[in-house]
Image (cartoon, rainbow, N blue to C red; front, side, top):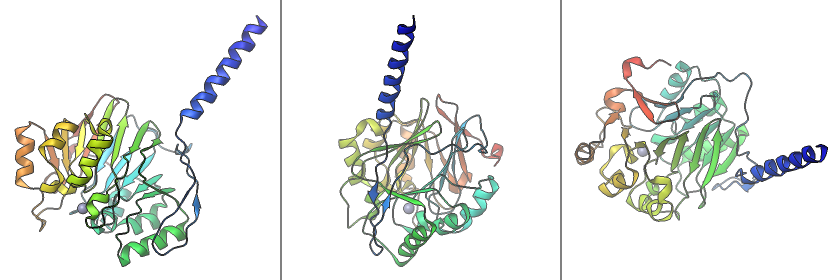
Amino acid sequence: MKRLVLLLAALLLAGMACLAGIVFLLRSERVRRPELPPRQASVPARIPTEAAAPSLSVATVDFLDVGQGDAILIRSPEGKTVLVDAGPSKGIIKLLRERDITGIDLAIITHHHIDHYGGMDDVIREFHPKTILLTDSPHTTRAYLALLELIEAEGSVVVFATGKSRKIEAGSVLLTVLPMPPVDSSEENNNSVGLRVEHGASSMLLIGDSQEAERNFWAGTCPTLARNCDVLKLAHHGSRNGTDGFWLELVNPKLAVISCGAGNSYGHPSPQVLDLLETKGIPFKRTDLDGTVRVVSEGSGWRFIPSKEILP
Ligand SMILES: [Zn+2]
């Protein structure tokens, strides 16, 4: 009997060791930035749990109404917070405060355009993201370099999206960072971070401002990460170059979200894209018309929460 117990304990330990091996640990890597010296950064794959974190019954994703830009707040049922982009300006701070956000576990800048990182400096000063995920695209501006200086000074752990996909657990929400294609030096939109966000059987795809070249790269190299996602944030604010029939066929979303500013000068979203959604019978929400768009998951699919019911 004693021998049996020992055998079972050994099997259990072996199983746990095996499981630990399966968990994808983010390896130390070099920070790559144009004008700052590199340093080592070690990042846990699992965002540590804080005892004080508030517990929600559902996973919540808010496509925040930040005008012409993107800012997407993901909250896990365990109280983990992930912010994907920070909109063009400081309006993001008020929106986060209204939601009782006091800290950010992971901040992601999908690409180096100001409508995605413009509010990130204030987010860093106010909410001190523990980890920041960036790309190493060479496209830069004075404002972006200043942001990198701030990140350096803040001491957040920095990781870069690479040519390999990586998984990050935020409580029970699983983020898969899609592999980055080779850098497109002529079109920064094609250097966008892509994310598959899963909570149980609920799936969502966030793809920055990616255009056809980057989407085709994903369709060719990792179609299973793009295929059959319940919710699709249309790329590039509903622009014509952010969505096409092929992509909608692959992703096959049940719901779509467009993040764009009311009366924006770019004409986003494109009438052709809206026609495509209607032809395919895909319901959608727009931040310019609906304000902040919220979807929630209890683990078996995302559902829209009507605007009037959205509470922080
Ligand atoms: Zn944009």
